[in-house]
Amino acid sequence: MTKNSLGLTAADAAAELRTIRDLIRYGVSRFNEADIDYGHGTSNAFDEAVFMVLEGLNLPIDQLEPYLDARLTTAERQKVAGLLHARVETRKPASYLLNKAYIQGIPFYVDERVIVPRSYIGEILFSGLIGGDDGGDDDVDDFTLVEDPTAVERVLDLCTGSGCLAILAARIFPEAQVDAVDLSADALEVAKRNVADSGYEDRITLHQGDLFAPLKNRKYDVIITNPPYVDADAMANLPPEFRHEPAMALASGEDGLDIVRRILKEAPKHLTPEGGLLCEFGTGREILEAEYPNLDFFWVETANSFGEVFWLTRDQLKAGGK
Ligand SMILES: C[S@@+](CC[C@H](N)C(=O)[O-])C[C@H]1O[C@@H](n2cnc3c(N)ncnc32)[C@H](O)[C@@H]1O
Image 1: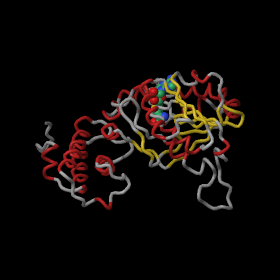
Image 2: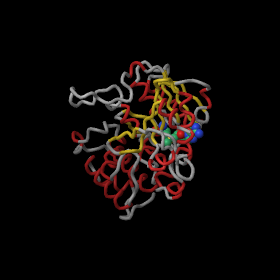
Image 3: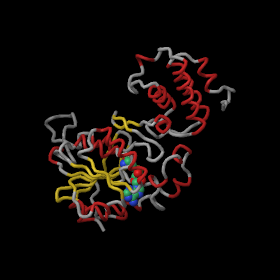
Image 4: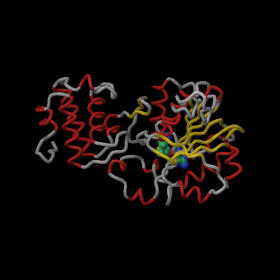
């Protein structure tokens, strides 16, 4: 068994630690000591340890307080200490060790065939930008991308990976049929499992292929996409956690925008007259603005990003695209 810098194995730690609080504290100490990287649902050692301990014990991940001082059985302590040690030793994202990731509180099965879901589009779909009510002053008209979600009949999720955004779209657009495309047969196996678990099997259709190729001439009211967008320099310097993810889910040419350019070119043909494209693309905003001076991008803000997602209507794409 592998020992950490204190000479402790996971079994040694499990024998001494008693409570959930103990295990979280131990996880934070080990993560800080090993200087691991975050970015797969959490951004710091405490949140990572809380997620791993609660999820590892099948407890609700948003309810720490009632359980903090609960003592654990020996088997539970061994399981959780094993997970915390594995996180440091393998540098795998916690979601791969637990086969679980959450977007907007909704759980998805994940393994190393797909990236760990973390798209900003999840938050946007659940915001006032879809459907109109931002919770603010009712005298002010709320700005919306899609005014009436119930009027949306067809949605496309390009580059679907685990199927997470297609499933969220099926919730937000209750009358819509959702097509979801990925080039990776492996990813689609994971998506198939999540779609089955979601209960939306009758409304989500998975397709294997290169971007729009499997869709023939089909048109959509809304296209959402979180395509690969990591540039070559960042790919060469990925922290170990991100190297466990499929490279084809991340890499997209020298400046990271190869696939985004293809989407901008092909999307207008696949949008209805009132349709629009919601695309996450990372940090290449300046490049896009310089390359498409006539495209009237609407940069969508989220809690943790500004200018990493754009919205364009079909008319804007037609008027300003290449
Ligand atoms: C950044 S991941 C996004 C996955 C998922 N939508 C999410 O937000 O978690 C990008 C996905 O695009 C897929 N992909 C890469 N190139 C593709 C292509 N040319 N056509 C379709 N899918 C592609 C990858 O397999 C990967 O699953």
